[in-house]
Length: 208
Image (tube, rainbow, N blue to C red):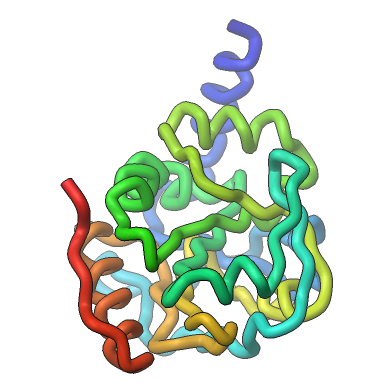
């Protein structure tokens, strides 16, 4: 009960702070733990502007720590044809609102594709991070800290939610998906198939 109260208070605070936007901006930081909300991104007809900065870097050499204490490295990236990485934060209403859809999408992916999340400020309150993910039904990997290329990519994230795709070699593929998506499943599957095609792999579909 106490945990649910804390979750409700957090969600209410996020709703008030981000009522009119589809994404939350953040200041540059050297690690996920230093992520801070900043001014909102520019908008046009309710959508985040396409003129936002692109994500730079790659994930060829790094070690990251997951919320459950396990480690995640470039070897885990290499094990899949495509890895989709969703960056979010505890203070971002659109991030929390889309988490149930994200959770369902992750469960429907084929074996050669994986979706993980990175909570940029999750290390500040791991308990609340777990509650949000549990409430959403997300059962996958969530990273909260790391070094090497992981730290560099996190520092280049300007807005949350931001979702990127990397191939088995850790190269970024296609454009970052920035802001909440009205049809997350369709937008994400389209991006995955484009990334698979660019990597010389066959397109895929969601499992039912």
